[in-house]
Image 1: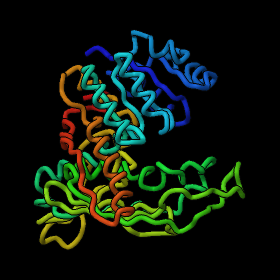
Image 2 (image 1 turned 120 degrees about the horizontal axis):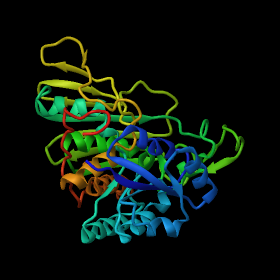
Image 3 (image 1 turned 30 degrees about the vertical axis):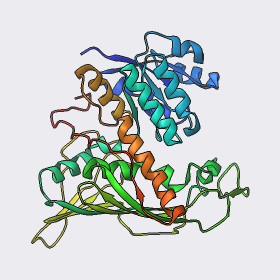
Image 4 (image 1 turned 180 degrees about the vertical axis):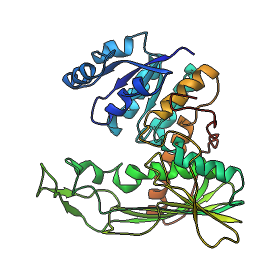
Length: 365
């Protein structure tokens, strides 16, 4: 199968794992990159063989690029996706798909009009850990799923991140920063969300940075930093999801799914591996389950790989724009529910992505 050629927009720290796809996957060839800071694009092109740094206009005009990988900051996601689609290229990007639902809806409509694929991270749900969980649920190991719990509990990034200001701006916070990992995992396992109810607040109006190089600077907190929500899924399951930057320590689990005949303990949805534990009806203890799939180490770019195979096989891809839109609406719905003091009913839905084939290898499907 012939490899499709891809180009990367945004050559910051996260780009390294995507440039490494040339060595990890057979179906993708990264041939170009660009960045508003062209020196950074040249630096990455020098580091990775076969990659050419291009000015922005030349990049989008290049007919050899089949897929654009959008690794820009969230505020630029919409503009870059739109430009890629208008240039006739498939587009995949880091989360979120866009900042607003209106922007995301416009992007999906444009992709449909042009017959192109649109996708967005996170793709951690395609890793060996969560795919093993999906197979266990699909094969009936815990019966019918009836409930789930998810907790992302921390005290925020100002103690370790060199530039933590943006985490506390509108459009960020623990929900928009980490929520996509939890929501995407839950949707991949349980299907789309029907309704949600939430409360949101914040412990501090200002935070002090204790990491270098901005030690001692203060941050104005402009978005909720503790959000507790209850999610009703179309299949009848009910999930509790708490995302917080206001917790000093916690022993809560990352994710759990409980069914009529058993319970499943899931790995951190921001990782690709395990461990996975199951406790079935009549058993006294949880048992660790060997992972059934590969891609257990950092495999960011797996969503791009699946998109490439989907293009070649003319099938839907798993980390697709409609699921990313559903996740984005759910996050906005959490804020709307709290602000309006009533339940939020989802307007969108999405298909539950199919499990990966057990026959795939670490080089591809």
